[in-house]
Length: 292
Image (cartoon, rainbow, N blue to C red; front, side):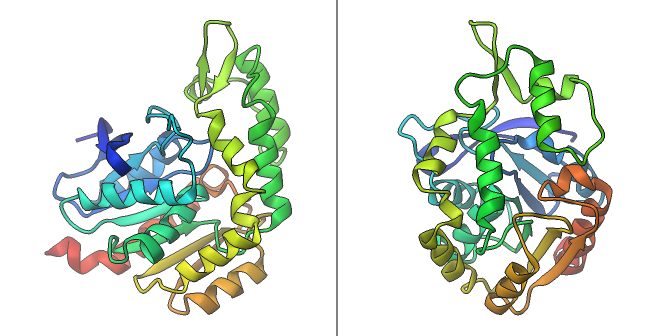
């Protein structure tokens, strides 16, 4: 089966769009993207894992992509975490979870606080409890800048992204970018996620980088007993080496990979190296389960 679109139930039945790939009886791997992204970010990684026998489930987080928006503004980390717990509970066997940025933060809360034992392993992509406030502010600022007023064209959106990611080769607007935008009746293009999501983050003063956010995430991380893999972008401005050491103190058994030439956007910056790192960890941890 290849890249089949399905609808899953998150917290209180919240509709979550997903794509599945790989053998139906393969070990399930849930892929949770970062804020402002969609499940399309995982396409290459999902296909790689599926080709090695894993059953990948790439989700659109609530309020993103084709998943339902939260009419009540329920976009706290705990809401995203609860969705992941519900999705995990519906899989045939205990799944591995790979979470980038927002997805990783939700994974820490889901496994470390909400429902310990829900996952077989946890891979965190450039996210720890101690996020750099300046890096968080840069990401939030980028997302908030055009959340409500959108863009006059896909080309304008492409230029905004190029300015935000100057380290990447300049690209013209592509068909792929169009999947991250919605054209409304006013003929303008808007991000494929609910503006209320980023507004909730700004109301919380940056959320994860606030003192409360750091304390809650650190407490949850200290409770993680499952295999954990932290993947950091070598040039990340959100996860410093000091933050890595802090996380190692909370989770001494964790595995660690540093992807050279990658920023916080590890998946897009160095997809091949990232995918290989993911694959090696999962095969090493779950080899016995995959043979049973």
